Image 1 (cartoon, rainbow, N blue to C red):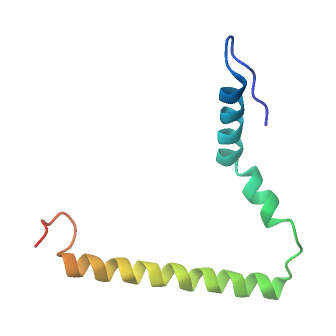
Image 2 (cartoon, rainbow, N blue to C red):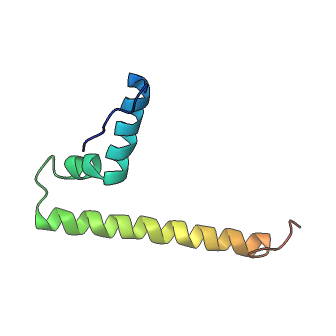
Length: 76
C-alpha cells in the first residue's frame, strides 16, 4: 500500500489516508486471519459457528420486522 503526499498536506491527513486505504484493501484483516495456523477441522467449526450466528441475526431481524409491521410501514 502506497500513499503519495499531496502538496501542502499535513502528515496527519496523509496518515489518515493511509489507514483508510489499509482498511479498504483488507490487508490487515487478511494478516490477522493468517496469523496462526488453523486446521481444517477447526476451520469447519468456525465456519459453522459463524453461519449459525448470521442465521440467528437474520431470524431476529425478520421477527422485528414482523412486530413493527414490515418494510416501509409507519410506526404503530
